[in-house]
Length: 507
Ligand code: BES
Ligand code: MN
Ligand code: ZN
Image (tube, rainbow, N blue to C red; front, side, top):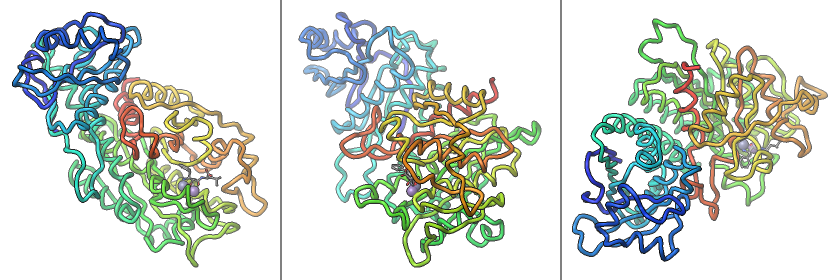
């Protein structure tokens, strides 16, 4: 999408839709909305008086000016209560307005910068939020529709009256657009069907990113995995005719050679389809498992964002990618695998495959002597039971400052994270009679904590955090993603990691 900032009056813009806003409970529109209301012959005031529009966050109404040749329609979006207003509310309002514009078939919008006037936000932060929200809200995945149902939003113009704010707004809009595009890049990967998005497809995407954004990419293939001893990943992969890939995508900022900074490593679970293996899933649960590479998508999107934002921190993405399939060659419940760090794992449940992939990736991360390692994985259904679809990602870490950084990034990005405990007891449940550890405790209790305890055995030698993003990665049909629909992939983790990495050097 083409996003620009322009100096002028919102009421004078020409676009398929003009977007203005309203705080909840406000009787008299102010600022840009008042200017628009004047052009509309007080139609906005009439709308408020009617009670049909409350100004709730993300609520929209559409008005049609009769004598204005410049625009066909005006979208009014609610900002919620002014006392609760925040950057995140500006982003959500922009997203809701963009989604409405798309639903109406608009190709261009001109919008006020929510919060930059009466909302009290800094110009740069407000423009960033609006650009990001527009990118997210306008997202569609229509690649496989023979006849597109909706047109794409081609351009958004952010309109500002105060010349002194324009330069800051341009910088903010560029950042917001970059981060929004990277989240949408991750959504595309997750929305791709599993016969297209295979481990090889992910590896090819990483190579394309490297070429386009000046990154370093390398893919470890089957033969090299065997040489290295990635027995846990190989165990999961052996049932599939699609070869596994271990993808490495590195972002080194220009000055790294001089500063010798250690990288932050992001690890993403890349199960491109999870049947459960011989511990097979039900027919109803299986189709959603095309999203089991949501962690991988978030990692690739976040490294892309690091490059686009030109961050000062080096970032390395590690993506162990495999299918979890059933065949005569599949691993069995009762097999024993040896991970890259030499630990042996009894496979008690072939559906607990994600932690096996992560075990080898976490052990591999050590060779970078990283500043920190953060993994993102659609790891457990139990995380969804605990926190709810769209509730929050579960955060596990024993590293206090890393915990604080991630929680702060959650607040800044609007991508919710909630901490859960990593009690040593959980590891007791993972004790095996035949190997060093087993991959599943065998009951339903604290399934998310048990998975984190398992991972901890492989995350040795660096500060580490685990994010179980199963509740957040994919919005099932009938429960479209809030606040940035439609149903399907959310791109969760990209914006969270971008916020984390942006502030990494600061504190
Ligand atoms: N990919 C699933 C977890 C999942 C389930 C993500 C639903 C999103 C929606 C994971 O590989 C899995 O199957 N986990 C098992 C673990 C169990 C066997 C210990 C689960 O959650 O049931
Ligand atoms: Mn599974
Ligand atoms: Zn899985």
